[in-house]
Every structure is written in structure tokens, then in C-alpha cells.
Image (cartoon, rainbow, N blue to C red):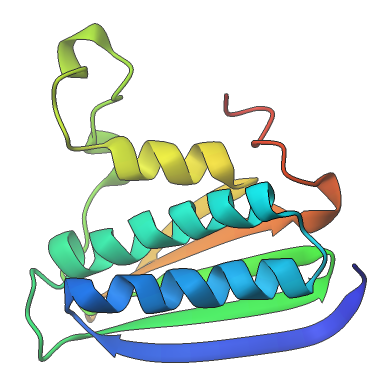
Length: 150
């Protein structure tokens, strides 16, 4: 599973039909790095949610705006960056989907999935616009969900 310095970059327009393309790239990279099918699937789901959020909430479905995805594999650590061109948001303001008051709401689940499936999830916001989401996963841990998040 030890690989050094693989990097894949892709730019898509803000269309939901492009989400699967980015997800497939993530899963393929994970499988090539030696991660099992189950682990690759869960990382793919985290990527799917991140790209969907960038398209819907970040870029507000504006097809003239782009979503940039970068996958960097260093040793066993996979770093995934998703960048949109939107106005940003406050991730702490998103309700916990496990809270009984929020069980029937559809919002907030994507961030929950990302935090569950990945080891670290960090947001940063550019003053000129755009949200950058960086997710990391140690592929050497196998297919287990992020232990501190479940």
C-alpha cells in the first residue's frame, strides 16, 4: 500500500451528473492503493457528499462555477481537497442529524458522513469567495470508519 506522491486533479462544472465521476476516481485511487472494496466505497461516499455540497450549497447550482477536486496520496495517507467558488458557510451552524429534533431533516447528513468515513475534515474559507474542504484518511487503517467519530 506504500505509494509516494500520486496526485490527481479534476475540475468539473456544477452539475449533479458530474458527482459520480469524482466518486469513481476516489474509489479507483483507493483500490489501486490497496484498500479493500468496502473502505474504498466509504471514502467514495464521503467524496460524493463533499462534491454534492460544493455544487448545491457552495456554488448554488450555478453551472458557470467550478468545483475542483484534488487527490494526493503520500505513503498510506490520502488527502482529498474539494474547492468550490461559492460564498462559504459556517459548518458549526449545521444541525447534528442524530439529534432527535433533526432525524427527519435531510440537511446535515453529508457533513456527518464525511466526518464518519474520514479521519479528519477541515474547512477553510477564502476572503475572495470559495470554500476549501480537506479530508484525510490513513489507508493503512483499512476499511474501518473513523474510530473517534462513530
